[in-house]
Length: 441
Image (cartoon, rainbow, N blue to C red):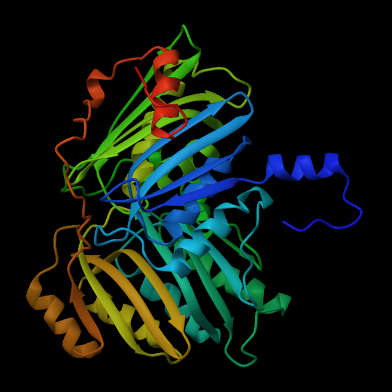
């Protein structure tokens, strides 16, 4: 590292201590790439590290997290979506550089786009109305993410002015957009909770969606229809002797699971001091030792219940319900409005959507069910494909989370029977997993 001539030794020491040290190892483990990070501890740095890996859609097979005093150490066992180790040098270099700069607290900017934040009551055809209004108001949708959970919907939509091709700066037009979209979200029965806002800069998109749904209290609402039994199992116990609250989560494994859980713990103002994450073929087991930012554990039964509800919601929001449809075609004005209208006319409900534009091509993913949440009729899906274009709209299977099982791995402990280990054993185990000591016995 080259230093400016005016940098004194103390400043160099401070920079070294605050800059995360990243080591990526492909030799130690035969089934995963090991990513180690250690740095000065501060609130949110774990989320920043996990976010870097999640944004690359990497699978985190195992992870060990430990903080001692003011120092933070963790290790991640990661693979690509096919369960293979990471070998692309550009990807490895990007991970090292990104993790090495997480202490900077960078914010994602809108890149010349206007960002619409929407929350309200979900219903069949809602997105069709939203995108129809945007098309009518000469707003070109460049990117968008839509989540639904427990009858609520949250969306971030990135738009530009169709005429100028840049962000929308006309205050009167912005007011019209907000008013029209708020009326759509209100419908007939959501007068109070429907919200719209416009901004030109935003924090990480998926983190913002979690924040929006948390503020909307989706975790307190009952689902209108729910036909799956995959409810995450969450337990919270206090370890009075050591002043920790121990949170255990057991659920179906998937990409970005750890990000979703850590994101919500961070936004609820909890600090993760130690954690262990393990996965089997399709299940994930996560254990966190947490405290409030002021150093105290969870102090009441209502708070414990709220943490359980919030973490269940965090896992469920991104759960993929329905048939996955991928739309890839040349982008044009009003495309989304037309596709969504076709979905609505055929009784399909969009439970989640990821919309993006690359150059002049629209690359969109939709998860759809029938009007009451059951799997959509294949005949209806085929009819919709014919109307949109068989070569443009394709049915894709849900991505399979791939884990290679080894005989030497310990079997995970059930959440209900979580054992509160003594702190000495916990720290020794994490230090061993981090490669800092030779034995954890």
